Each structure stands twice: as C-alpha cells, then as structure tokens.
Amino acid sequence: MMAVPSGTESDVPPGTVTDAAVLRESLRQPERFADLFDRHGDEIHRYVARRLGPDMAEDVVADTFLTAFRKRARYDLGRADARPWLYGIATHALREHRRAEARRNRALARAAPDRPEESFDERSTARVAAGRLRPELAAALARLSAADRDLLLLIAWAELSYDEAAQALGVPIGTIKSRLHRIRKKLHRAFGGTDPLQENAT
Image (cartoon, rainbow, N blue to C red; front, side):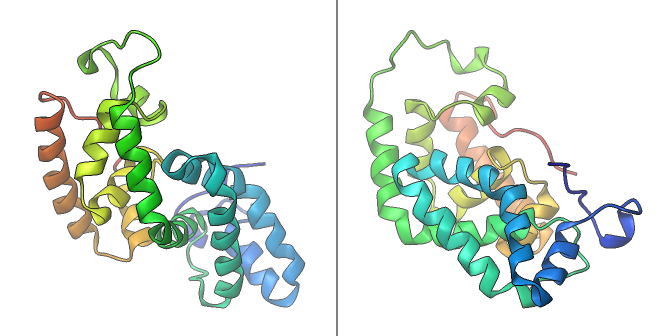
C-alpha cells in the first residue's frame, strides 16, 4: 500500500488518494472505511502489541477502528494523513488497559535477559526505538506517568513527529516539546546520560 502523504490536502500530489479522501467517501459509502484499516491496521496493531503484548492487542485495535468509524464524520478533512488521529484513538483505548500495561512493564523489568546485553551506550537510539522492550527500558517506562509514557511511545515507537503527536493527543505543540524535555531529563538520569528517544521531530 502506498504511503499516505502527511500534511494538508493541498500538499498532496494530484491523483493521490489520501486518508482524508477515503474518510470523506466513507460517509457516503461506509464500506470504503475498510481501506483505512488496510492502510494502517498493521501499524496500529504493532504499536499496541508492543505496549500490551499480542494477546490483548486485537481487542484494542478493534476498538480503535470501531471508534474511528463512528467518529469519521468529525475528522478534519484538511489533514491528509489519518495516522495521528488513529494513534490518538488507540491511546485512549489503551487507557482502559493501564493496569495490564503496568503489570507487563514491571514483569519485563524483573525479567532476566535471554542473552548477554550490550550496554545501553552501545545501542543506537533507533535500535532502542525499534527493538523489543528490554528490562531496563520497561523499568524506566513503569516509572513515568501514564501521560508521559503515551507521549514518549508515540514519538519513539509510533515515530510520530512533534506536530503529529500534538494532533494525536490534542495538545499544543509547545506542550509536547516542554513535556518531552522533562521526559528526556528523567531518561538521561535512568540511562546514564543517553537519550533513548529517537529524534524524528520536524
């Protein structure tokens, strides 16, 4: 499936079928909404599965897209890419499972590594963002507030830009930047001065 361009509808090359166009058409033809799931379902599933584990991910993803379908008439059709909107809905759905996520993070933090671990300093931030949840990262996540954990993982795992994270969470971009600065300071201390956030701000 072709990647959906980010930005507004006016930024999109002619002939490109954007998420906004799919959502607009789904108001008249509800079956067209399936295209949105085809475009982004796997990506949202991967993100949720990393937070809750695969057993619970299916239900959260189903809830995410059911909510998106119900709210599609309220989508801002000026935004070509629906990913931030979907991640925002998924984040709300995940809040129903906070206890499960907290238990998973605590269990992973206590888990012995299944192979020798290289030091955090020897791993790139991209690998930390893309790799599986390791005990030391799970422990750091468990110590963050729920809101800070949501923001961190939208940036590091979902690879949203600051602007996209602001859209997903419904807060100003200035708030995103100040909160990330505070989170980075906490993580610097936890990881001996190394920043585990993947830099993808725009």
